[in-house]
Image 1 (spheres, rainbow, N blue to C red):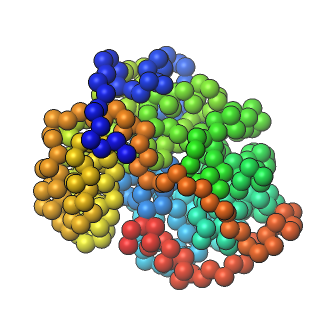
Image 2 (spheres, rainbow, N blue to C red; image 1 turned 120 degrees about the vertical axis):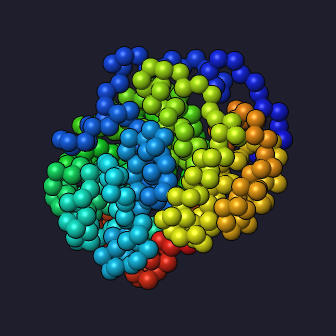
Length: 408
């Protein structure tokens, strides 16, 4: 918590102490990220798929801020195939959204194949979720539980790549379930063997959730062992962290998650440093308020006035985190029901206040807790099994879960 602390003053670049001496990219130092034959990404930066976050309104805001590839939030294949209305809404995109990128969740190879066959004709990139640590997912053998069974992982990925045709397919994984059940090496091998265009590694286990520091050494080791591009994820809070990660690990690109919550201009900063320019200071409150109002308007246009404004409550909290007096403002923001309420709440902030330096690395979404990962009963008995888990979760439950994650 940084409320009411004195904001440190900086001269020159705006960066925390660990990044003050990081140079901007030199000409030719980094290459565009090539995914498949047709998709070239510059700068080599992706907006991470985040449930309840990377919906079409936020993706459009990030694209306008300079993000070259924005991945959708996790779309449940089963719910989409069964016609769930909210799932179909979340899987939609604006006609001008290019490249179009979607993340798919399923532990069933047949579902993945059928979903991608229908989705691929209008899509430029597909990502498969093999890293979700949410108990409701792992307890039925999904998300980060799948890489525990490399043959099942291979079956799913093979079906995905085959159905996608020329559309590049990537996978996103964690280090494993826990320090005793690491899976990232097998995931890298399977990704290479089954034709994935790249693999993204979040340097934490499912048990860690978002606690502690991400293990960048595991990303380095995966780069050294892999024959396909490796993307790094974890603890990229400032634009300078992206350069450090790529230089230290050798990864071909970075995936930006929690750091951009309430900071979509982070992608403008990333574009600047990869092009060799200093990004300058982030916006002041006076400059941020129009961004917040714009974001709220996009959410209401997409979800409708009621659901859109309820979604905006969490965003308002993220946007204002760290500013002086923002605790009282956030108490108002979590109750706003229309655009005027939101504007009134934001008027309590000092419009000339500079962005708090300490807020650059402030956690905007997840707590520091760890968890005991829940797996299906006897799931670890036979890790060579490639049979899709037949968990008790129903389509209705998956649809309800989609709705909950999306703020509905």
